[in-house]
Picture 1 (cartoon, rainbow, N blue to C red):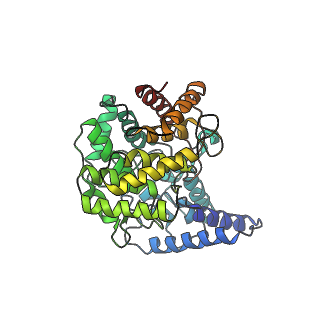
Picture 2: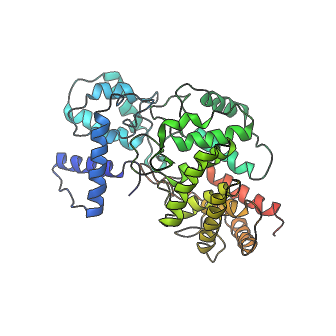
Picture 3: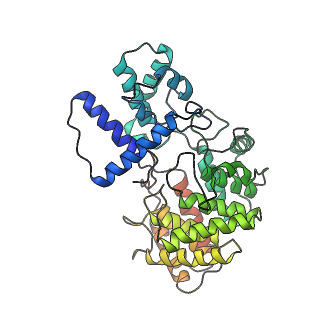
Length: 396
């Protein structure tokens, strides 16, 4: 329910069904609430003077909403959000419904652009389509963070480091999962920027400051939005921001963010991050990050996250809400292994080592976005670093 555009997708599919003369299914009240909420957000976005500005607007990523919205000039929209590969914002689903709207209208639109869009869609292989077609900076940042759990500075190939360095220095500000230095029409966000800052410090690259995402701070709540027009703040975004604030010794702001996390995780009992189907992701990251923050609220949050991870441990030694996976087990291991494992944690890590040692990484869709997807390059990193981290602790 808390995916980026769930309500927008449902509404777009309803409009498409109506256009085709198909019956529109009734939606449960909870779904209807999300649909209406997303519709109100789209209305606010449409009235925004930067609606067609790809450095700030997520409209390209939400291009399915253009279907049936005759107030939008599809030619201007296509010019604003089309990427070099012909897609709209590198998002296959958004690209498909946008093309269907262009064809439905039958209006003259730049032929070359439309043909590039059509060519992009006709060359996709459905089995390989994920959330986005290109996510190098997300995996660069996260690989650096996870490998750093083993100590030392991870080795990054020179071409990757060069791209990452260019992105860090890009004047557009916030970084996105697919980068700002390359060809993208999706704006950056606070979570990716925070992770990039952490990775830059690990890799010894010039590191931007948290001032990059100051404009997305919600002072009345004491937390950060991931992107403009976001309804509800994300756990993982604020976990990673807390890590940056701690490194920068911004104690007052750090306290406010940790207080928000405490209210969300302890007070409201929230364990899921809106971007992932498993609580192991959010609790693993909370335990991993909080272990390295010298603050009483961080100490309490780590204890809470540790207890929840132990409660979620499966009998086969791994972690996973729908059966153990290498990805979820990796998050849990790196979280539990941060700091000095005590009590039942060492035994849990030993059992996890057996699970990882006997189960090669599999590609399981766990992340939430346009569709469920799996970052194929990240899962082997989690599998490898989790095993190595347990070995370091000499628990096996």
